[in-house]
Image 1 (cartoon, rainbow, N blue to C red):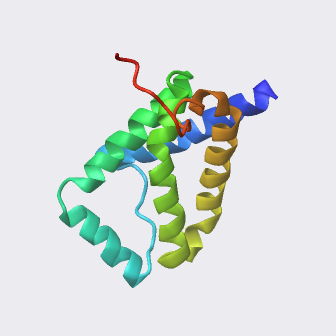
Image 2 (image 1 turned 90 degrees about the vertical axis):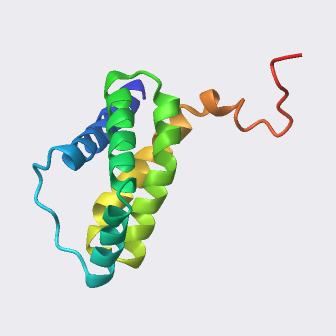
Length: 131
């Protein structure tokens, strides 16, 4: 099972490292998008900060996953990104659903594989360490 976890971690890490790097050094062609998807992405670009922020998040988390360091942190950083990727393709660009589903499955599988690391975060009665 450890090999399956490692393959999933590396695959998800590669996906986010490549797409995160592509934000700053465009080497992949922009996919065709529906008008609604193009308008949405144009608004993200127009903000001036959101696309670079997403790029840094994807690249950093992807590198963490590839290196096998801070994996729970990487999964936490990527969770809202993955949700937005899936919803973007559900509502605005259904043609991209296969990759969105792959990313979602990898994220959920890895979160389950690393579930012990999240026990403290999911504690409903957590207490501060100070005092």
